[in-house]
Image (cartoon, rainbow, N blue to C red; front, side, top):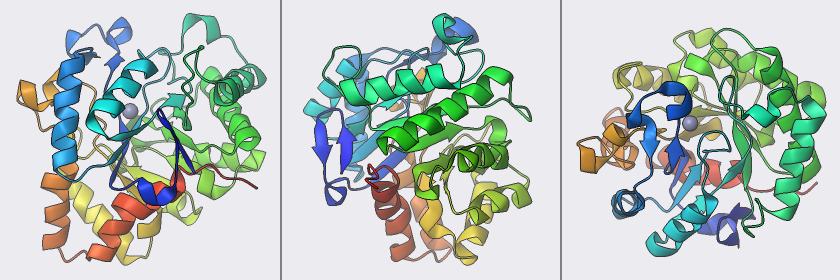
Length: 304
Ligand SMILES: [Zn+2]
């Protein structure tokens, strides 16, 4: 089963999934840029309609507390658009962790996340379906980020939910895996995010060899890396047989990413990226795994 903002659904109901997105977000407290505020609910609805028209049926929304989380809005959007939405518990990374939690240790993080998973988010009656996006800095894990990742891992063990991470420019993925493995978190409860931003292929292969899921989840963000480079790495990973561990998404966070403001919109993976993979000979079975089967399993609640 998967926990969505409208309740639990079966794996086969999940459909084509965007595995790492943001609909309602406000990063302006730190970024000081009004482009990083998404608060136009009618706009979210119309952007989601475009996603649905392109075949999208589910979205994992990884805006946590400190990033401007609003799960009641997500529930309203899911009701009007029919897109399944998974909300999250978690905190992002330094310096986005809310003031009240900045000195917490692993047990305090674990307790907070576990309570939201078991009792719902702040008396809304809405439950998180994933722990994320919990993250680390570029080429370094700050002390509070270590406590955060380990706390997320402990909550994953206690509840069966999956941990989905943020890596900065793809770095420290192996270190994240090792912290979670040391706790005993199973590989099918771990998604290491933003691995399409790491230009060091050996590091990404190390993460894949560990058997966990990875996010190719900043597709279309060509200011960081051209999509041709993403495709070259992805084709190699598919060739090596890792396609059952790969999830796809675009991680939109800005007004300028939306169609109504001239951006590509949430359907860019389906409309722009998948056809390019097909031109390169990627089979429909592999595409179906990356878009449908892998996320359905990755985000299912693991009962052991
Ligand atoms: Zn994100």
